[in-house]
Length: 232
Figure (tube, one colour):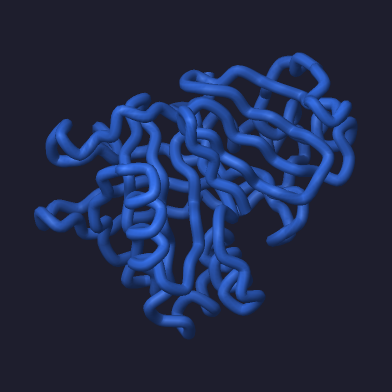
């Protein structure tokens, strides 16, 4: 089963954004590191059920704009559009090669896998792979898939993990029926459960390993961590 891995929040000043958000909710965060080939850097806040929030910033706009990595392209697009807040999220898998085979067999357009790495503050290197089903930045976001090398992205000690768990991620889409069909095919998901929210809108929902994935008509990306909601 897929798991929610992390929420990606873009900001032109991640230092201020991190301070404001973590102060508001009394969270612990840590400096992540630099992604030198991409011209980006990050800070992170780890949550209790093997998930985290990543604040992604650009420190070399030329490198970011030249990158062929769709996430970095999305960050560069957000930077140009002055759009700050949640822009993407990752679903964690241990079967990326099987998904690639599924995409090739079923004609699903994708990019990658892209290798990634960064130097952690303790001097060690964190490595991973990312796979991107194709989508247009800012339109009907499709989460990317991430596969971590070794133990994955964990803090050096448990004191850095916040007690708040990830609970749900909600994507606003232009067409529920169309996107349900796309998500079930792209992510090999079963049929979702359907319900109505307080506004009478249809919600399609799938269980993840550590929370829920929801689609609803709209143009937003909202992540819920316990009592907190991070909204685009």
